[in-house]
Length: 283
Image 1 (cartoon, one colour):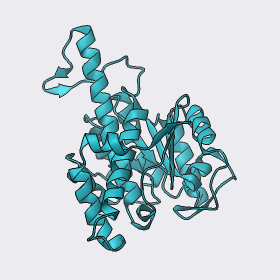
Image 2 (cartoon, helix red, strand yellow):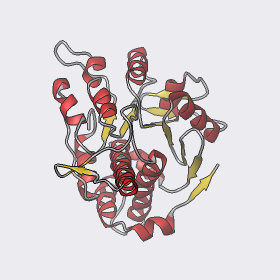
Image 3 (cartoon, one colour):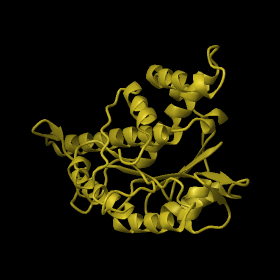
Image 4 (cartoon, helix red, strand yellow):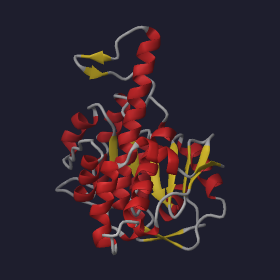
């Protein structure tokens, strides 16, 4: 995880039964990004001595692509400054993203659209007239799975597109909820990649592990394995349904009491609850 809200994200992953590793130093990112699992990369405007953001984030992307590790990218506040716009464009040109996640203002800036205006890290205005068409078009342009977050979430891989109506508006009042979502999306994209590797190994009659580690199936030209749309959808549903359950609790009075309740609900959420409460529609 690079450039994230450490407290919320790491606790969210821990509650979901996953373990996270955060690294800010550029040279160590190459090694970490080559490890099995997934990478959640959250762009932010930082400078380290002799190292601008562009160099700061670059090592993780190529390493993830070479190891065919899912790479979830959240261009936080990209529409706020020209520097961020230039940097995100460089990052998207430098390596292949598995899932591109953002709110309407952020993704509009990435797409070069004037339909929605960014206000810092938030969006201003009513949103896209055709959100499903927008995410499908951006996914095709960037050759990735695109997740548009908001009161209603939209997700597309360029061919399939779904509308997700779960969640609660209080998520928008909690700092770090977007980082937590990115973490959960990365977690389930990692699971999707592992399932694909295991299925490929089973069909070929070979082992999917080398020295105890699950290997990535596919050719060297592949940048990721597995169904990233399904992985991203699972991450969105887990956080959104957990939010619905948390806000309905008697001990939640506002954002301050909501956050720990949300983490508890993520920890206790069962697969049958996700299936039973999911509000997903093909669009």
